[in-house]
Length: 277
Image (cartoon, rainbow, N blue to C red; front, side, top):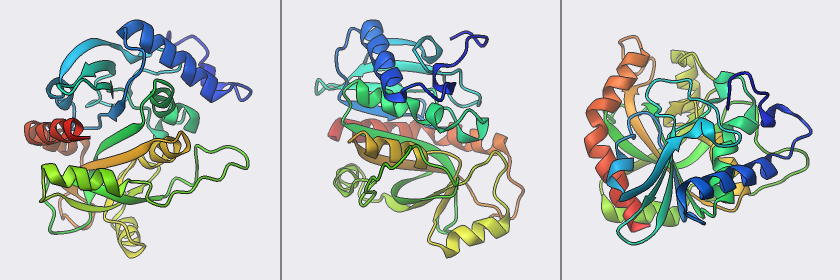
């Protein structure tokens, strides 16, 4: 999309699910794949997994697909890729994430998830780079998400739409992930609005209410995935200990560096998990 073209999801009267269906049709035309089985959103540090999952059938800028925007954050590759695994399954790899803090509204944040569902995906794998609250965790460690706390004060659900979020992060899928790596720990993810990092007091609040991980993505996407009937698997890469847990100041450069250092190991892990789903 041209930056000067009105975005279709910004029209309050637009049907976001119809726009997702248009995007799915665009993807089918570009990839030659009628239906994808699994969708994978790559957060900071997880990018190399796309190369390890299987054979890339097509890759192209996400902004060329209906409703997608150019990524605003370094560390996100801005492409969509169709990959065929050795088991013959088709994976839609989403390297373009719209973050809530960009101010474009929740519809645009969850558009990639709704598009994946319209493209046929029944499993949604969401990854991110995030801050860890548990002092036993170290930068570079992957952690499964067992649940989340949505601190954005927003939702992708519109109107009187009531969706059960029990077992939102599928226990079945987490069990499969642990057959690949039995050492995987898990925790509760807290999505803050961002873009500023959390204060030490906010981190302690998150800990008090049951959070283990703090970040700026994923929860809203997971809710949209559940609404679309998908099973959700979530992974956080602990890029740093959260404010007040680690004593040094936080920086985006630290997040990028931690992701770069951990990328070979976590990408291999993610590719093996995808192969087992």
